[in-house]
Length: 210
Image (cartoon, rainbow, N blue to C red; front, side, top):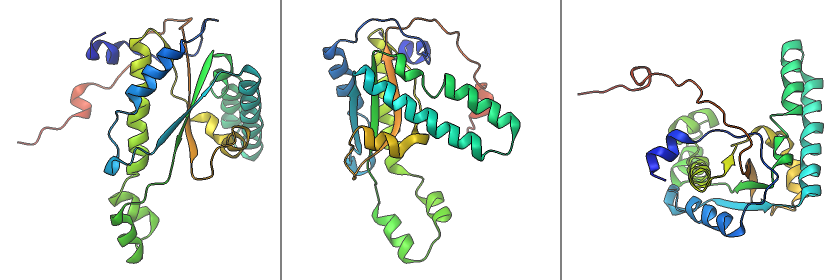
């Protein structure tokens, strides 16, 4: 599949067929993910491949409990209703996929950030000057991952909602304390064909300075 075709044809898939994902394909997908750029070539990523269904159910239940807590804290009825919907579908759809990839990262602190802290810059100003380069790196790896999966005929969904249960996920998967999860990526043969969602026009998002 040509690169431009893969980018334009990729969709977020939330329904999967009851069919396995080949181990060789998973390895190929992760191999492409690790080719992403990262700050200082730090490669601040790790990928946990979850195939165990009871374990996926356990993760989903942890996300539901964490979402219930959010709902209890919310004072807005519309927000509560939205979260209830997310709890039933968007935040937990990964439990119905044949494979879920849990993407981990680790803290990345640049020399520039250290100097800014020493000069008593607040965190907001540091973020403006150093906008999470480590997270940008792992995001590039995720983009590689989902495009590679699409090119091989699989569907994926880049999920950050489940990270509301970050501490429970760390405990369930026995994740090394030096790392933490930033996304869950369910993967499988698509059981739906979503239409392309609207995108802003080029003229809205591009500025040319001559």
